[in-house]
Length: 170
Image (cartoon, rainbow, N blue to C red; front, side, top):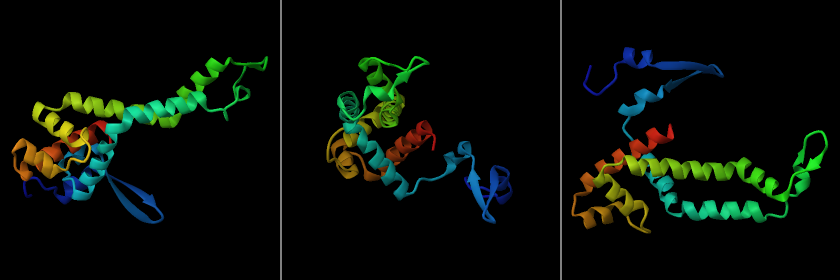
């Protein structure tokens, strides 16, 4: 067995098979995916996703305002108990905010990225802030500003991406 590679027996012992339309689909368990090397396409997708963090506070604010001031939601949608009494408008607004899946997703994403930033080492945090909190900065610009090689920045980029994947639970 080559170091860092999986033998067929070991790979099959950590896999589960599902039958779907007479095909076997191989699904690796998550804890064994840490050896998986991220492709450039994976990294670009993660970059796009993390790039959304810069405007997440504004998106959360706008979504809350939309739910609070949206007139299409009437209080008739929220009737209570056997008496068919209508909740107060404040309660109806709170219920709309708590039940909104889009808002929950945005807040969850913000929490994941905040946790990621807390767990990064100082150099990775500087790289993260330069790339994702400043508009229009590329990885080459980050390498130039920090006076580091592009290879070093790409290795740190992979570390940041893997930690994000671990937190998100892909």
